[in-house]
Structures are given as C-alpha cells and as structure tokens.
Image (cartoon, rainbow, N blue to C red; front, side, top):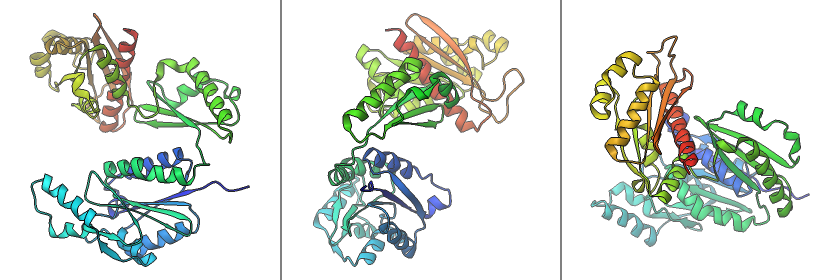
Length: 418
C-alpha cells in the first residue's frame, strides 16, 4: 500500500526558543496542512544558527514530502534561513528586478527611502520560485529537491498565513491531488469538553471511520470531524451523519462551521437586519470591543464601546445608579443590567452587551470569588443578565473567557429574537 504524504514544520527563531514569542505559526500550519491532506508528522523549532537550520532541513529531507520553514527571512544579520537553504543546495543569490521593485514600492508607500540593510531582501536564490509577499518585504521561497517540496515563509503571522493560503496550498493540492482530506469543523461556545461529551452520549453510534478531535481555546471549542474513508461519497456521508448526530444534541452551542469567528457570525446577522451593537465593559477593559473590531467590516454594525472601569464612570457614562452600586456592588446582576440599558440608550443601538467581574488575582470573596463575571444583554425590548464562573485563572484568561461567553450570550439572544 502506498504511504500517504507527510509534512514537516521547521520554525526558526531564538525568540521562539526563549519563550518571548508564542509559536502560533506551527498551530496555523498544522491545521492548514491537515486540510490539504498532508498532516504534519514532525515539527521542530531551531535557533537563528546556520548549521542548526541546515541540520533540520537535512533531517526533514529524509522523511517528509512537504517541508515548510517559517521565520529567518528578514533583513537583519540573524535572519539566516535563505542562506541556509542556498548553501545546503548550492544555490547562488541573484538580484531580482521583480523583488527589488516590490521592496521599493513598499517603502515608497511609507514615504521612506529603502534602508541599506533592506536591500538585502531584493536578492533571491537562483533555481527557486519566488513567493510574493503582499504584506511585507521578505519574499518566500519554493523549490523541489529529490521529490520533496520545500517552502520558506516569513515568520510574521499575517504574512505567512496569506502566503500559505494563496500560494503554497494550491501548489500542494495540485501535487497531491489524490490525497483529498474529508473533514469539517463545528465551532461551539458556552460548553466545555466534558459537558460536550456528556451531551453527545454514545459515540459508538457514529461510523468507526469518523474521528472526533476536541480543540478548546479560551472558552470556545472547535469540534473537528474527520472521515478516514478513501471514497469521497462515503466520507461525505460519514461526516453528514456525524454532524446531524451532534446538532441533535448540542445545536444551541454551535455557532458556525469552518473558520468564521463568533464576532463574524454576529456581525453577519446584524448587517442583514440593519441593526447596531454597543458594548459596556468593566473587567474586560475593552477586550470585547477589540475582538469585535478585529472583524473586517465591523464598522457596519458596531456603533461604539464604553470602558467603565470605575464606579464613577459607570454612573457618569452609563447612568448606573449610585444606590445600585452601593447596595449590590459593581459585580452584580443589577449593575450589568443598568450598564447594558445605559449603553443601549446612549448609543441609540439595537443591542448592548455589558460585563463586570473579578479578574483577580485579588478582590475575590467567598460570595464573589475570583473569576465571577456578570454579563448583561439588552435588546429586543428586554434585558437579561447571567452569572458565569470562569475560575481563578490568570487575569488574561478570565478576561478572554468572559468576553467569549459574552459574545455567545449575545449570539443566543440575537438568534432567538428572529
């Protein structure tokens, strides 16, 4: 039996090894390569060292069909990936008129002359294919040696992601067209792994060819359905049945399939209804608004956001009653109700979401421990409030989980409003 093609990732950079930068590129590439039908079997992270990079490439050449290097293509002396590839395969550096024009155009748009050290990025390796980088100055590299496809991309995530989706993935899919990958991702919120397993019940009812992968991320959960069937019709039937099985049990928690974010889904609904959203945040300090404005086109449905961290600001900007705060406290049902209603009134919006909680590590009590968050939703002529407990994790996790849960509650209210 012919073995299935395999891929290997090599991420380059001292900052990754020292923990100064999170290696998000490996996660992105792992998911995308799986979707291409070329699952990652090996992943390594190496220092900004010529010999280490070359050793990693040589090892990968002995076992992987697709090799992707990320990082080390910048203009500084410690960016050595291009040199490592060139020396390993005996490829000369040559001036590229196309790449030079690209670099000059980027700096022209910035109103600057091209720095001397950036002129190094106008050089490309002979015998390779230049991968265009529309978001930056570092060109990517593609070459084939001994039947292996070798790619090198910049380490900057947005640059790498765009280059992979638009240039690398099509090359891989053309080369390995018989390795179709049958999978679907259901995106869930408001439910954890253990709760999901309990609600799904007897998974033996699913085909043995269906593999479920649970991918939690800060209060959200992706459930990936994969069929190992080699026949396309059988695989599609497997996944369709599995999706139906899951939706029958947890439909209220599924907000999307594929890659759409919760904010994107909410935005699409609001745009279709010509409605507007506003936010009123305390413990999350603007994080919820940031998640919303990370979504392209948010200006068509997001009106404004209030960050009212102090009690005085809650009173002055949102009209929260002084008596409400003194009697019930900032972290209470009554306060988030008044925050949401005040934001809705001030913004003239159709929907408002509010949050107030205890992010920690201090400030918790027996009655209101760290991780207690109240969320208010106002719209469609009613206001609701819900309390969630996200645990005494780090401040960052408490804030992120709270913001995600607020989006989920908002989504449920908007959907139920019709």
